[in-house]
Image 1 (cartoon, rainbow, N blue to C red):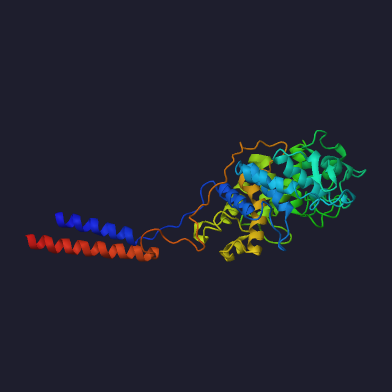
Image 2: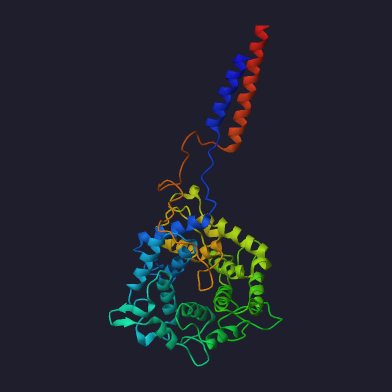
Length: 397
């Protein structure tokens, strides 16, 4: 029996050595993993997100600032990015003569600055200080719509921005957005917001619909008045759990916004929200993809399965950042606006999930073998140990 015990211990030790090492997975709180990746990406691009041509993507920077704030991390990076946006002067919002055309840009600039305690009423430019609230208010048309080319998408951001001002939002501006969704009860777009004007059912857009719900609810509109729009969103959720854009299949951006909107309705959409969050977490890379990608969110399943392990090439960096900057709203379940409570903000950026390496990480110990081979090997070795023990036992007799 003494020999048998020694053999068993040896077999078990060898089995542990040969057993495959499971790659590190994304942490349980994947919103922090994604937030950390977004914050570190901003840090290496001078605190501002980049567009496909290498120019600054101020809109995605704003989304990321709001997402990081909602997650409650990376306070220093949030401030740095907001200050970089403020320092851009009129690069994003253009001059006073373009206020009507740049109303959405002005709204996003307000949201970025307000999120970090900067004062949109004193926005410095080369031509003097501008009051961005006054600028945005001046873009309001007589019917309550905002900008030269009003849209539900832009109106929603304008409302969210004006909610941060001392004067609030004019009722006509809220009413205009309330009148936009499709009202044809025979249309699949019923409740959806599009781009063709009041009541249009031809171009219902889930992103615009989700933002409209978020803005109107933040402005105090009763949930019952938004119920048809919420119901429309569920009609464009597919079997993956993701929400489908008219221009693509289920994707992180549309899903992130839809989850933030439907969260207002609580238990009415529990199952839909759970499926959507599972879809979003399925798009987050873990350490098996390499330390540079770990924590990032792909746009969709196809991108997740094909993305190169060089996220700082421009096209990949841009795609991942744009997906994560709105996808994170789905992980945290809201957009930090006037009627939401945000976590206490901490300064630190969540650290990388994995040890830094330019290649997918390999096992720290042991020999990499397939799972089935490790199991078979263990069985064979255990069988040999039993045979040897029996031989030794027979000799002792």
